[in-house]
Length: 259
Image (tube, rainbow, N blue to C red; front, side, top):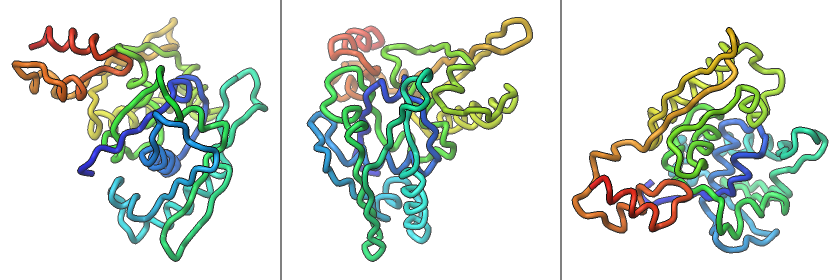
């Protein structure tokens, strides 16, 4: 991936929505977002074309299995949904309104629902941006959510979340009722992915009430930040190291203090 493929999402989609996508489904959604201009209005009938070449070039998946993976992922995504209000479980949004398979061209056309488009279209504030390359090598479906959550908390380098909140936003239901299983199957694979293949370093601590783990504290930072601080703060350096949600001036002042 030589050129940047930027992903933009409204923070409500990251911080408030509950959904459970597979690894392949996450990748399909991100490939769609990398193809659109989230600063402008995306029409309801906008066609997102995802091809075998996209999957191979952007995600590093072999062409021999890419179309089969794409087909399976899209069919699963067709039946998937998002919830925003945990007190209203019957109100759901679907991701896709239509899909067209073109096996002869090794590609699929996708159309996102009108309910989803406002969360990726005409974004002016309270959104999160990151480069697709930072998540392209993730091996766990949960890695995407954890990474986006950390990128979305504006200007922070530490967050505290409850175990119940993690279960809710990841739409885990009755899965992994024991904390040991939650850590083994959700938390640790995600943090390993993020630390090994993304631009973030993450550590965590546990908070207990009595003998029960109730919260996790995540502390994170951008890799190799201090090592490439130039003597003179330049525009490219500010663009690279600005924290999510910072204004240009805020980033410039903070970064200047490190020089």
